[in-house]
Length: 112
Length: 115
Image (cartoon, rainbow over all chains, first blue to last red; front, side, top):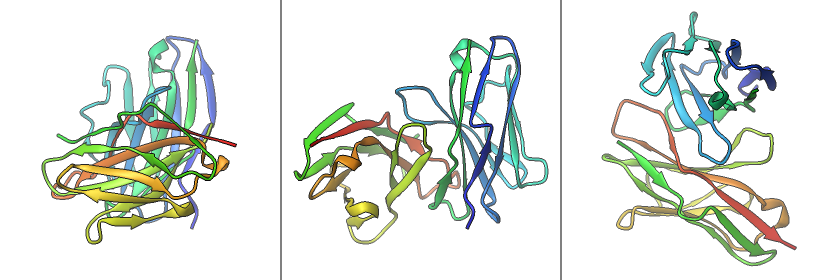
């Protein structure tokens, strides 16, 4: 089966600019996650979707981050405006049963 | 709340020797435990998981892990390390009793296998 697709792979932007990341999960996976992985740290959950509804966004900095999964399939994560501390790898993952998770290759964001 | 601790930032082992990467967890319900490996500029690759059943779990590439409920540990092991095993390893947990499904990760352990 195809894996979790993410784009772009890399992005460099200046602080205060906006950026968007895209994720296409494994077909049929109802649950989609966005994680932020800062260099030297473990991934941290930003937001979890079940179909097109938000299950948990308690750690999403809502003043600058937003995410949507309008049709319950692919998802976009947006940062506006970006700060230097947003430099990280943004990982998308999907699951069907809750104990089988597949991660994408991630988007490496550098804010300068 | 759920959490994971990986007490060692770095583990060095000689090729051919056994390796252990440590992980302890905290969760209020039934623990579902996972190990992932990350190579440079790559996403997370699944190694193995414990959901229920036998405490010794076997996974990909010859890795195994032992679930110890009394010590709340889930250490990753391999009998004979390879240079190609050098990577960043993450332990993760979720509460199997809850409706939320998100994984909580440890801070990672960098494994270096020396030739």
